[in-house]
Amino acid sequence: MIGDAGEQVGVVPVEKALQMANERGLDLVEVAGAATPPVCRILDYGKYRYEQIKKEKKVRSGQKAGLLKEIRVRPQVKDHDLDIKVNKARKFLEDGDKVKVLVAFRGRQMVHPELGVKLLQKVAASLKGKAQLDGQPIHEGRIMSLILSPISAKQMQPKDGSAEAKSNKENKEVKEVKEIKVKETV
Image 1: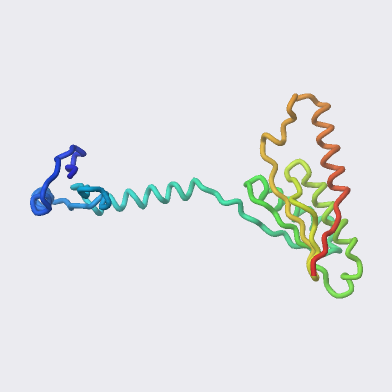
Image 2 (image 1 turned 180 degrees about the vertical axis):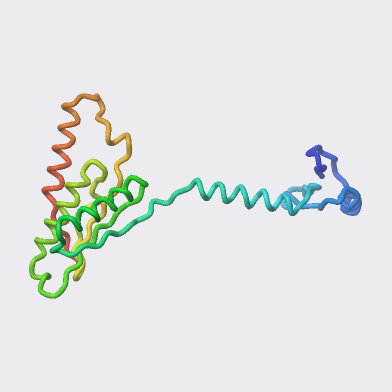
């Protein structure tokens, strides 16, 4: 048994342990039931439970799952409207979230999937310093989609720190954006 101040009391019969807990106005809580003999502790169970919940919330708030945010556009979206969507995507990427850009086709727009590819290329080019492509665009029915993930700080800085390395990296990113091919799934 462990006392209320954290000191080890030793092996004590259950009745005596309960009596000690009642004298102090506290609870007898089994900490390790699988041990031989079982380990019990004298403590205020309500306070103990409150502190456990508080710790769990703190751990959960520190964790952030990489959320997937969606941005929806049409193939014939105007430049200003697209800029607003790109700025929203940029904010999501800065927060560490992945962004899925969806181009939704209606009616006769389905005849021109190249408009969707151009639009996705334009979005990817405007976010080239903030995002990297996760695979190729996928065309599923009336929706064409592209997933962008944020670039970490390590990936943004060149290894040798020179301006030449930066320009080579930018050229590589632009080249990747120009070579987008659509994967069709039915």
